[in-house]
Image (cartoon, rainbow, N blue to C red; front, side):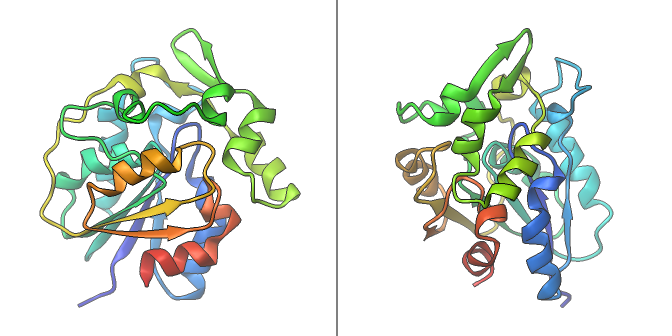
Length: 229
């Protein structure tokens, strides 16, 4: 049986670029990967763009893969992974990295409020009409607290907008019959570790790593071991 291809799904305000350093580790180990750009995070996103369009982008990308697939969702990307999973051919397993894992019928906003702890990410959010933007200075601390200065500056400059509709769109899918693993980031200032405990309880197994919210950039080798070990 061929080795699975990892499809990597970034969080809100991000892009395929979020996985730059982690994909380099996967390449080093000979593991195939693809990273999606979610429509709701594009600077030219229509304000109505929501979870359905994001999940469709993941499904569309999966159709280019021959063989088994592992879906990996980070942060808001966990909601997208949960929505898309039943439509992925040859889905082998799911992985969530410091991610939201909504129940059927839940949206990202409701899921994030299951534990009422204010984070640096909450402080960074700024409403701009039908979009959310991030204050760059606060976002750098919320998302990239353990990255080196060069990486933090680079990543913060890439941050986009996010449609409010994407957070308000409910999950319509059911849970697929595949194993799931949750990677907790214990130094996270975006998705609080207390909330991650609740999210992890919805998965089959849990691994914890001492990382900020973005281990794909700050600790890519540690993330590799947690995901693939």
